[in-house]
Image 1 (cartoon, rainbow, N blue to C red):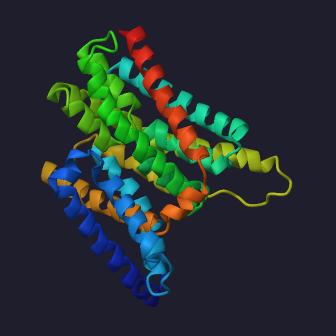
Image 2 (cartoon, rainbow, N blue to C red):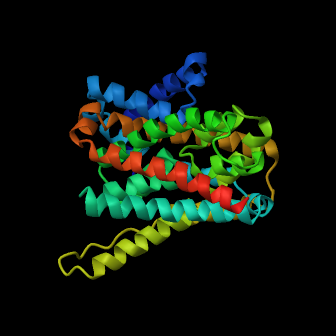
Length: 338
């Protein structure tokens, strides 16, 4: 990219940067923090609200920077996310957490895709995005998958809205279920249940912490294992879509290779050797939080509330079905494995 092209990105990048600072400040307010939405969810919500009343994403001076934020910048955010994970986390969790995460990921995604495309007649992109957000890591999985399959902003925003709605309900429901003995399982099993079936990392933190610090630690580790599956998931999705395109004589377009997903896995492996000091890792994670928040806010700016409303009730219905499946299938699985 030439120097002038970088210069043209600056106004939009600066606007997204400043608005992300506002989002970060809001997340420090006690009332917003108590909602358990997390910085990424709050950033995209702020972007959607602003985008609905202030068409900033259509400004000729800002559009390039905003597009860059929800594209290449997002991919770098996903790559740096790997510094939160290590192979040691997988080993420490044991087979129950691994089996739980794999079962939830595969079953939830297939349920969303089949019901979404066959019964609800949603587009393959919408069903894929809702399945990815519900089965892996919420909004981050939606936008990472959306960038790989070239989904529209409206499709991505509709999928993210399901994560916001049902993930928020989960962080309230799960502690209530634990307190009232809804499931006959141990505290350890309930922690795995939380980590394997709640959408967002921030929502897992909120739900686990509402029970105990021990539950939160195991739940977060289980959730991070799900996040680690994002790279292989994107590779398999792209391979499946490429195979489908090969059978379509009218489609000559080759789907892009998600190189950032492979780099993400390489970063996880590198991080497993603990070569970097802890303070450097913490600095990278802080930077990554802000980069991902910028990407979410940029996506929100391009996705107005009216556009999501125009998508209809079908995405919300599919999100609700996935939510019920996560609660029931995840719970019965832990009871069976206990």
